Length: 130
Image: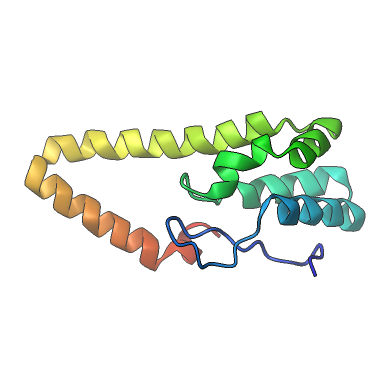
């Protein structure tokens, strides 16, 4: 059962066996947050948690097409296209900045640095994104 005190369960990209929240879980959590904390605080907490998702997350890609999800957020003044797009753009900017740095290092060194960075992000993802 999802409550205002629940912690989102994030999707692990390319791993179909996780128990990640789907669009209806995120929607229910947002409603519970509003009941417990009011709209401004609920929006802030929801958007902060939403932005922690991976670029490859199913929710980032597809919740905006879920009619119940999209209709609800439009009705409360949060456009799913906007907060989904913002998440994607933030992740894109990070990738562009990283690729520019890697290009300066050369191909082999760049690949090693990239693999090391991916390893660090996976290993420390809870600390990085909290």
